[in-house]
Length: 446
Ligand SMILES: Cc1cc2nc3c(=O)[nH]c(=O)nc-3n(C[C@H](O)[C@H](O)[C@H](O)COP(=O)(O)OP(=O)(O)OC[C@H]3O[C@@H](n4cnc5c(N)ncnc54)[C@H](O)[C@@H]3O)c2cc1C
Image (tube, rainbow, N blue to C red; front, side, top):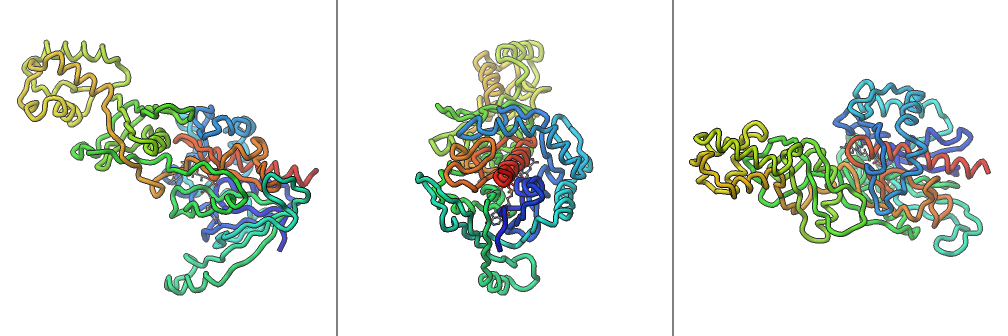
């Protein structure tokens, strides 16, 4: 069967693009999961933080730093909010983040399902895992001039897993024998990245475009928890309002190296939004060598002011236990631990009056820059997003059409663009899906 457009992946980008394509186009969506928009249900802890009022470029990252600028300028949060309203979704802004008014991610997915039902020109095949994409005869890939682009052939495996209640062995047997072929004039690739493989994105889709000679920035987990060397397990579960920063060495890479908010100390290391925000950078640094994260536990006070405060406490509360040095601005267990790191076990018996200036300075140092060595991340299984992906240098920044292979478009997380926590990744998925759909539409209107 021939289609005008085949979309691979019914996630955020693929669904948005499908609804945006001109209605005269015959569209096929192939999705390996048994339902569309499965990942959407897991977003924002089931609430789906789908955009942010502040879409400044500092929240978006990738090797080709400013690639997303043009598209984000065209499709900002106001435009997306209005579009979703037109498609039936009411939304609300909470501390700059956009959520469905219902605070239910399933409302967002239902919006797509409802709109798809109104568009008979869009055919959806779920349980179809794309296993191969080839240019149709006449289309040449590479540096050579492409005289007549004829389109693409897509092969997919009909994957019954999850649809039947039969045993896994039976399901495998059934799915292994069903390969189907479709052809299309244009191909929109929205197969996501490698993060959260349990939701359909295990990175196996990268290989299809690699065979089209599309360069790839090695994918790595981002928005992911960090595993630290010798984490103080007794502090696990404590939340700290702080500013985190990371040493990322010399690079023109655009991921932020600091972020503020609530950090969660865990038995493996560090979690919480600011940690997730800098994690892409830290994981990259780990590939180069050692990586360290610094926590400023009192970001609203300078180190010299803190030293003065501690000297005053020492003078006024001489006989109080030394562990009280941080009372009021640090959780008790954290002040005890920092004291232990500096004076060891004898700190338990010390009084504030016994802390000399050197120790007070060391406590202030520890508060303003508590350093943790990172040894790993929790990996793609726990990551919310993939850093890296198809090199955006090989795509038109307006239409997202491949500069290597005309007729091929990409949108969403599959490209080397990722954002901070706060609705940025979904926003990129919607905005890039809209841009690619307009790019495809323009090809048919010409
Ligand atoms: C737990 C979690 C929470 C998150 N919360 C938020 C949030 O609140 N806000 C935010 O902005 N971002 C959030 N994100 C990130 C956001 O969900 C993604 O960045 C976004 O969904 C990417 O959209 P996409 O369409 O590019 O890819 P995806 O949504 O991942 O969709 C890709 C689709 O392609 C399908 N697919 C893959 N390979 C094939 C194949 N071979 N054949 C057929 N189909 C295939 C997949 O099954 C999938 O349905 C979260 C991510 C996770 C994992």
